[in-house]
Every structure is written in C-alpha cells, then in structure tokens.
Image (cartoon, rainbow, N blue to C red; front, side, top):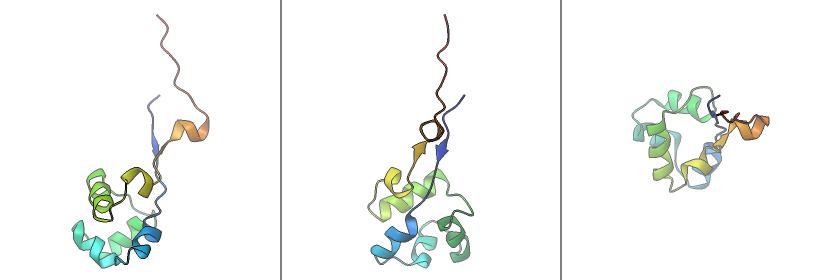
Length: 84
C-alpha cells in the first residue's frame, strides 16, 4: 500500500498572523480570490507547486503550514514487508 498524505491546512491562521490578504496569495499563485478561499478552507486542493510557492512566500516550512503527515501514522496502518 502506498503512503498517502493527510493535509490539514492552517494557512488561514498563518496568513492572518502575517498580515497577508487572500487576494495577495491568489495573485501569487495566479488564481481567483474565490478559488484561493476554497483552497484555504480545504474545499479544493493546492497543487504541490502552489503549496511550495505559498509556503515560501509566507516563510514557512510547507510541512508545518499544511500539517502534512503520513496517513499510515494517523490510521495505524503499516506497510507489510515483502517476504523473500
């Protein structure tokens, strides 16, 4: 089974703390303010490139900003080792 990423973003909190507007981030990743809002609320997903651009702009580690963790750790699932 592949490792999946469970992404829960805390972008809104960080963005507001840093005084960055939704419009500013939308322009940064070349999308609409409405689309950026949906991404921030978790309704739509960021591409990897968008996530990296936003994290860099906010001077945050992408893993911390988007709370990326392996789903296996969250669900208790573990990879089975191949038998030889």
